[in-house]
Image (cartoon, rainbow, N blue to C red; front, side):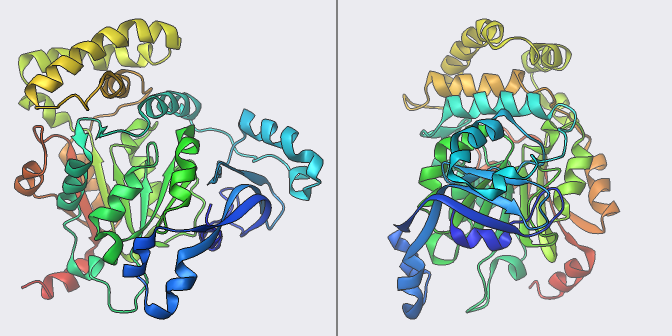
Length: 401
């Protein structure tokens, strides 16, 4: 964890400020390209920063403590076995915060199952040439098409702070990097904080720690460890429908959008069923019927089904979408797990999603299907909607040529 992230963090249980106790920390030279972003007098200060590999964050009100493991703060509002393991390992150092209570909250319906399934899914994929079916270049191009935001959001005035983005659902931790690059890269890109419930983020912590404008945090999207209304853009692609309530999840993350900021949502669409081939409709129907039961099976039993399915997906994907040898069995298995192992995978009507935006006083702007489809190697699917406050939408429209 970069030390400067601390000022942006809050206790997920009571929203108090957090205090840091270092166990292992060191100075790092952050990405040298950062000099293209900093003014001459700031370069020396920007390129060297203290990062905490292991430490403890304690709530200023004394309600709980939170570990930093492999550079990643674990800011869940409920305890895990990880907390006990961490405490047993470092209690001999006499860190007073470890005498505080464990996080007092409880997981929401299905959160532990979701955490386990997505930890397995993302840790199994790790870092490679593809995310799902996309190459890295395709994913960043897709993000640019999605982030066709008003100029008032992306174009920062000289000397203004960097665009602050909350990435809800960071996966293995690489998506925040893609978002940073898609919003302008080193020259003027965003400062991105990626959060996820899954524990695979611990595996990419060292890499993220050396990137100046990217951070990752393990947290529940229902108890985010930040001040309300503190991000210019809240980005949630393909995540919220994997919770017990997509609408409740949307309302929860929207609280962190600045009043003049924006939010982007992409979820599965019920309408997609009517655009599928008959084979896809059969697969869709089987998934809807059996996935909730399949998700609760032991992992070894899941694998008996998933590996043959992944092998078939590998051959079909390489043939239909011109994926080369860099698209491996690991990628195909990741897609199969994403389809069959999440406990929840809600589908929604387009008008239902628009209602969520309207009830929160947001103007909903669906993505341009032509622009987005041009950036995709696969048929367009799902519901992608951008939202800004209706008052800001009126102001923005006056300045649009």
